[in-house]
Image (cartoon, rainbow, N blue to C red):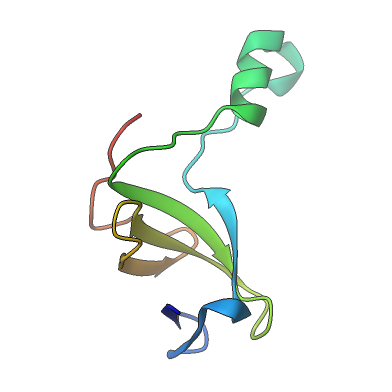
Length: 96
């Protein structure tokens, strides 16, 4: 089992206290009312599924109930960094 550091609580907790909510840093269309169906569909449904570093949004569901970002290696499942929403990662993810 992973032990995940919550940047809001300031401590490591067991993985079952958290839920992964998907890919982080997804750019919403600037004008959603006037974008094409293809643009909207790409935003809503298509996500990267890289082999290697990947930025994800996690939620501390059994703790502080706050969201934060995680950079995780999808091959080893190892968490490389944790940072609050609005902050930028120090590690670059694989574009895919």
